[in-house]
Amino acid sequence: MDTLRTDQSSALRLRLRAATERRAARHLSGNSERLPALLVVALFLLFAFVPAHAQTHPTEFQVKAAYVYNFGKFIKWPAEASSVARPFEICVLGKDSFATVLDSTVAGESIDRRSIAVKRISNLQEAAACNILFIGLSEESRLKTILAAMQHVSILTVSDIPHFAERGGVIGFVTQEEKIRFEVNPTAAEQSHLALSSELLKVASRVIAKPTS
Amino acid sequence: MIAQRKQSISTKLTMMNMLVSGAALLLACAGFFAYDQITFRESLVRTLSAQGQIIGSNSASALLFDDPQAALNTLSALKSFPNIVSAGILTATRQTFAQYSRDGQDELLNVPVLRDDQAEAYRFGSTHLILVRKIVLDQKLIGFVYLRADLNHVL
Image (cartoon, rainbow over all chains, first blue to last red; front, side, top):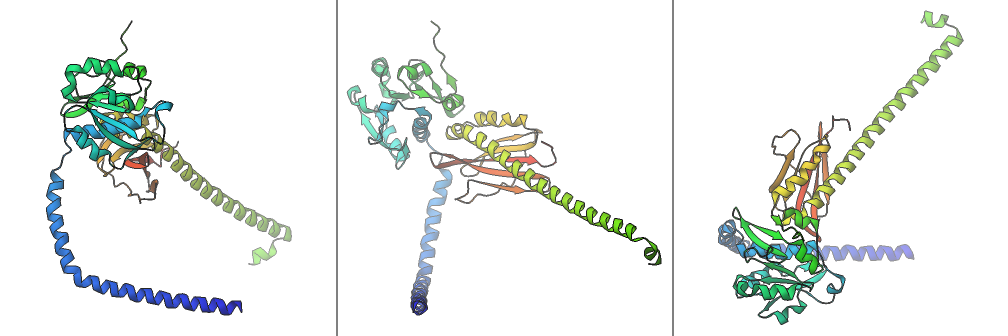
């Protein structure tokens, strides 16, 4: 009885397989009719995109955006700031297009298993929920006020304002030999209760030493 | 034949004993040799894999922040392992990022290609063992590390 049933089921399976194969074959032959058209489209796409790709060197903002995102991985965030439910916020203060570039860089990425949200802000009150604050060049005149406000909150300050790390920011971008590098100020990070990984210090172009008191 | 027949039974027995124990010894030797070879290779792969892991996790930041000099510094720590002939770090697109060589000469190697589901792969040559390992950070492939070890060098 049992053997009969298995025989029947295996016969059914065989018939099913034959049917799928037939369907697959039909599908293939249908595709082959469309093949020339597909080839033309593929060739067109190839020629349209290959030269464009060969030329693209990441722009300065693209590199900086990738760096800002990568900084997040090399910093130990304080426990109260890293709740999984809330997205990881990268805020951009300033009038340049950095936020747009950042948007496309971090799309679909995550830090600390949290999704990333890019927020454009215009005043410091909005910065309270941020994890990383990027300060654009346009804000140089009021840098002192910004840094004073950021001193004891757990926000990583990043900027391309010259001598940013020396002036009390945590990470400042510099350009050296046409390459984008960064300076790190561990003392400022400590005040913000952020632990910078030694890996980050290793690749920093300069680590600002603690002022001797 | 005649000479053999003239031998006493005791001599014959001794001869047979010698033959059998000799064969047994030979077999055992071969077994030990093979076992030694296998364990030597296994331990070599294990050591190289561990070294690759250390180098890999220490050069993640160098890769992400495009700093070949920092990667080179990490690689030059391999100086203390004289059996490593050369080593290097490749970017995720398999471009050379940093290279180290014991004898100070650059070399182009054909580094084994890894499948998507493989974390590392190795290949034995006649004189060398080459191992390649993925460098992964937050489940994302950011590069490869490869190491080439000398098989003739006694550890």
